[in-house]
Image (cartoon, rainbow, N blue to C red):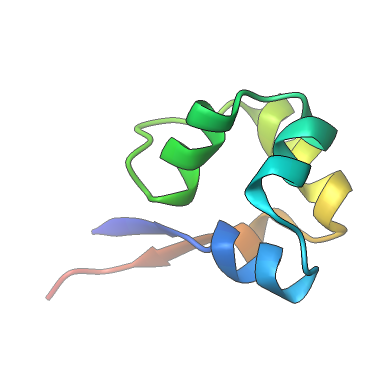
Length: 69
């Protein structure tokens, strides 16, 4: 099983750069980059909430579950 992070997809849809999102969410660029590349092991609900507010989306637009075969 795997959780896929579609942050880059939502950022592209909103035409927002990683730097801009980092400033608006008040999260360091390196932490946001770790999340965007799918290397994060966890995410705080408060961080997810902030990202969703800025990108005007739902958590399900950013997080996706896929089952390994």
